[in-house]
Length: 348
Ligand code: NCD
Ligand code: ZN
View 1: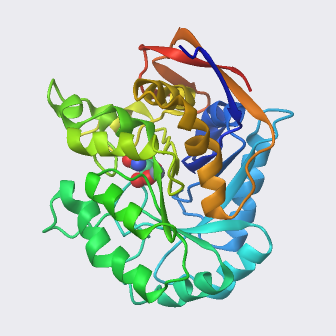
View 2 (view 1 turned 180 degrees about the vertical axis):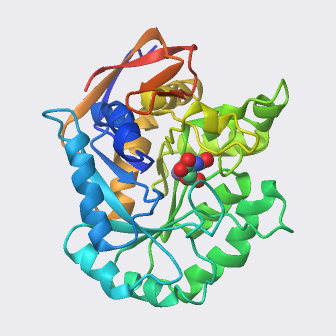
């Protein structure tokens, strides 16, 4: 039985580290383990221009623990009015790694997202030309589409036409959540790759709603059926290059999770890598963990893997229930808080 595993240092290809007090609280958890992370731009106000991107990167670097080598990869929040020249300049000057698209009102802080798909085509054409990655929150949020079908409907109505119109555009289907999505990504690789979260690998909707309503399991895209979870586990642990790690760690103050209208997002950075290791062990696929966590993501982004390594060991520990956010006088609940996990990152 494997009890210790060393892999190239992983990267997080989908992360929310927020801003200011919340960022100072949550960033150290990611920076300890991961070499790089795609930092999501859904702040208030969003990271919309190259100037916003430069300023956000500065704030992240200033919030890092002393001596940290963590590299934030900044993304540009796409709106109907995004200027292709600004995106290209941001990419050429090393500020923007990618562009992120939220359909308007699909998730947390997405009100400024895309409403008119015809208007963004100039930006997509430019990204295709300069080889810039396009990251998509793949959910169709029209009122007539059932919340559990949003991913499938987006793929059929929006994503497939986009890949045909821009065949040279490399895309990331963010936080893949359904069997339909898994089958689609396999068929569309290598043009399309997908990040997969720890919680979509561990939970089904009965865990979320079947034994009391557990508001901290409310995320976008929503957690789906057991068959979806099993398809995602098969995909993540397959070693196939189109599937890679993206935690979607997304801290919120407790009050916003428990409000009358609760907000989607789970803060999982304190135990994300350990959770992936647990899932891969359960599937008998620990030998594929490095591909998923450290190799496939850089490959899809056209980057080199990290040179150094981390080591995980089979050693039980208990995940803290919540993270204190100094300055906000708030707590953010932690995924699996109070539970014991068998794996621990022991060298990083
Ligand atoms: C994310 C957040 O809180 O910013 N929430 C979530 O449920 N995943 C946004 C997102 O990625 O959808
Ligand atoms: Zn996210």
